[in-house]
Image (cartoon, rainbow, N blue to C red; front, side):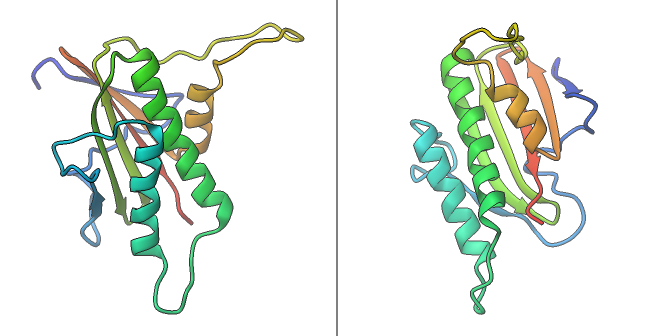
Length: 161
């Protein structure tokens, strides 16, 4: 396994990578505009990729779509993971988004081997930051972290139903 170790987060089951979507229909993938080898230049570009993916696959001929809160949750998780990769992870090194039978599967890789942490804040204190990782863990159905010599990869599954 090339020194890789996968760790489920907060008691969730391990996430699967984009190439391992499991049984059912083939996944739909979205890559940033530059092609599969490129990564989004910022969180807004990643959100746009996810928005296009959701719009292309969810809105059928009858016009049915996802609830706004589901789309908002998916975009929030996307933003937090990508922003944290830039801010705390030494830069974004990989990004994929795909639809599977279970929901939206996001994979975000960065250059840091440090695990994300939730920053505990004492009650009644003013503070900035520290909310992103707990939000990701709360909004995602499953989250896992795979560590490798050059960094880590976080996979999050967001249920769309």
